[in-house]
Image (cartoon, rainbow, N blue to C red):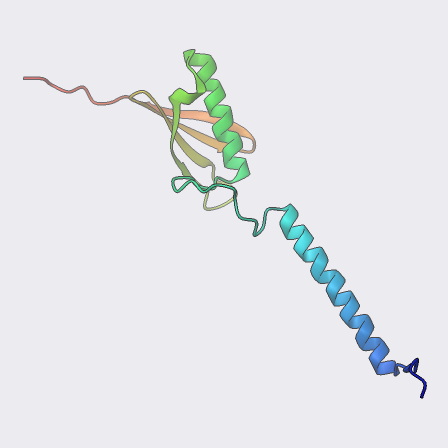
Length: 128
């Protein structure tokens, strides 16, 4: 008996093998792409208070922080992010509020630029 029998693949089996091979390469590519983009990778540590900020909004926050650091001669740690409101349409700006001490600064960020809209100081309290 010949133990080294070779089997001939039918045309259907050849196409099936080719399809499976292509599918596996495609799957490997998708997994690699999602791993590179941080798709499903778990972070090393989880901060329960951390919020994911869109890159465009983060660039506005960084710009605002630097403006306030320069203008007020303070450290970046003194600038606290209060809120970010994303635009409903592309024509509207991000609304970004930051707090330094007791003062709230409202900025609008759009098309790569930020504009100071208002400064809110706390209401004076009357002491009896």
